[in-house]
Image (cartoon, rainbow, N blue to C red; front, side, top):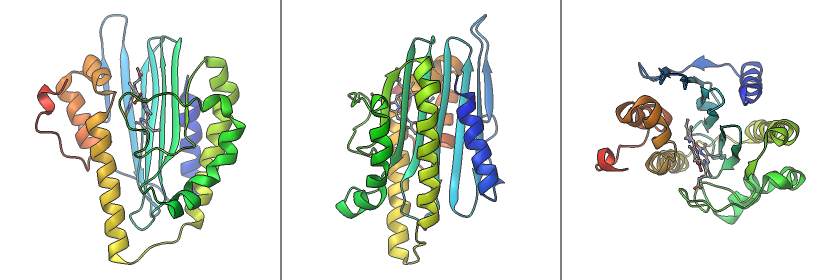
Length: 244
Ligand code: BLA
């Protein structure tokens, strides 16, 4: 269901940037869970280039049962621009949840004005994908913007509305990156390093996919996947093994 979204991102990345592969810890690049007819595969890709220090995306294909496309793009620590976050999920074809955002590192007015307001006109155009749903796992005021796309939707809307919205958000993200000024003050850079690291810790600790990964690939693999690849700058919680 979301393969065209992955293909679009991949093509954009390869056409625009001088990408190098970024290593994925052994055993985490892909996995297959074979539970009779419910086979699930997970595959991940990771790259870097001078402007973007970590580009990762993951596809889970469990046929009709589940299709997931998840991605985070982390800009270089010289740029304070938001992270690009993508989480598109389809379960049993009936439950489709899509989230797309420029995930802010800071919350002051100047930052909002510079990096979040530009999203507004796109969001307004795709109103039906911005449903103000309540968040159960995350806090909407941390690392989410007010113009995120967040919707429960259907397969037709994914094709007809989400795909063009996605392309517009991605194009805007490249424009923002093009215009971003490279920071050189070590204090500015340290502030960004810390904010990106805090994002990893926050996200790893709350990730609602832990159960999904565990059920397909086991708790140990799930824990490694979260802390050694997806959010590698996070440290596992001391209570992680008894967490859920
Ligand atoms: C929700 N994301 C979810 C859920 C799952 C995932 C299983 C719960 C769906 C449900 O309600 O049943 C899945 N999360 C994943 C997967 C990965 C992951 C597969 O990290 C990794 C491969 N999540 C993100 C990013 C964003 C994001 C980058 O990883 C930002 C755009 C958002 N996911 C997001 C939000 C929810 C969600 C806002 C709803 C959670 C809530 O209600 O608090």
